[in-house]
Length: 86
Image (cartoon, rainbow, N blue to C red):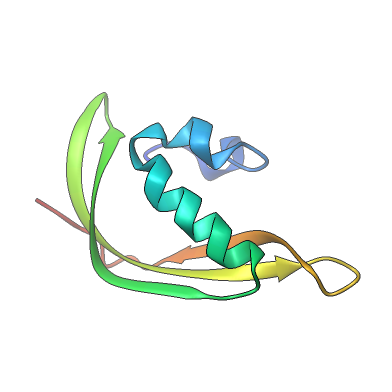
C-alpha cells in the first residue's frame, strides 16, 4: 500500500503513517483486536503517495495476531498485487 520501503513502517503507528485513512484503520484495529478478521474487495481509498493524493482500489485482508496467552494483540494486513489506480 505505501510508496515507501516496508521496513521503515515496521513498528510505526498506523494512524501516523496514513492519517488520510485513519477512520478506516481505526475500524480495522477495533475488529482485529476483538479477534475477528476483515476482507475488502475493490476497496476505494485515497492515499497520499508520491507527494499527492492518489485514488486507489485494493483488495485487503486483515487478521488478528495473538499473544502468548492467545489474546489478540495486533494485526496483520495482506494486500494483493492487484491494486489499480484511478
